[in-house]
Length: 199
Ligand SMILES: [Zn+2]
Image (tube, rainbow, N blue to C red; front, side, top):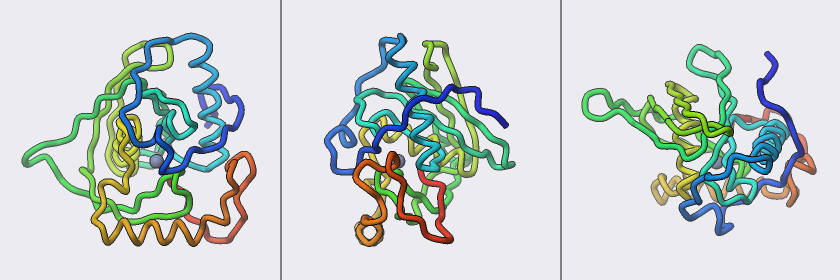
């Protein structure tokens, strides 16, 4: 299936530890050509990195914006752009937790289990300022939560116990030499059996 979003230029992916990754980003207020270029570049960058989601601060831009292209629980492709996202998660008896593997393009290559609600709904506006709403279970629920977190300056390492966080950082350190500084402009060093569903 062809994506409904235009592609632009691949940009380098910002890593954890960079300031813009760790504070609440600015709301999107301008929906002009600069934003359209950013969105197109983000899709190209996500494609190049083989991710399922990408937030603006992951290309160094301080804006509450993310894109995603992620399968839902039935394997159907769902893609979208969300500016100024607001997440809604189930409460009470509807709240069920899923302990799935999670990774992040800004800590490339490392994965660990991260507990999250198995359903999420996100509302916001698209790249033209029109209201949008997305919801889902499975990997899509995880992706919507992970990306909304990015816009708030939260990385999934912040949601882990100290033990799991340490393990994650150790794994990332072992793999760091596979990822050039300007990755994914310069591709990673290829290995067989890589797992790629990071956001
Ligand atoms: Zn991420």
